[in-house]
Amino acid sequence: MSFAHALQSIVSSGLEKVRDINRRYAKPRIPMSPAVRIALLVLRIYLFVLVGLLIYKFYTVVAS
Image 1 (cartoon, rainbow, N blue to C red):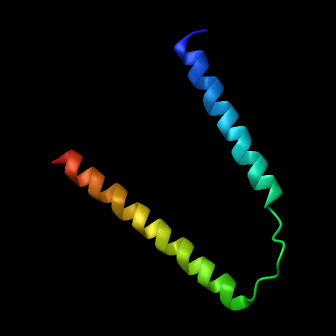
Image 2 (image 1 turned 30 degrees about the horizontal axis):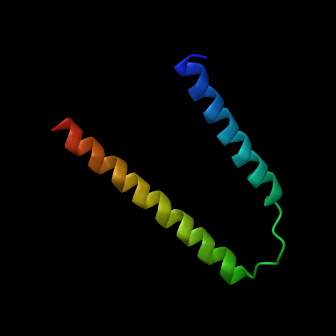
């Protein structure tokens, strides 16, 4: 077994585990209030902003 094949096997099994978890928790078990939905949306936007800043900082450091 080559290194590439072993790496592909590890990645594919990891992806399958993630897909299984996503299927299991796709439907929430408890109802969410509108306030909770808004809070989760704000947190998601905040996360995207932080990732964007991280990518921007990485680009500016590497480019200079």
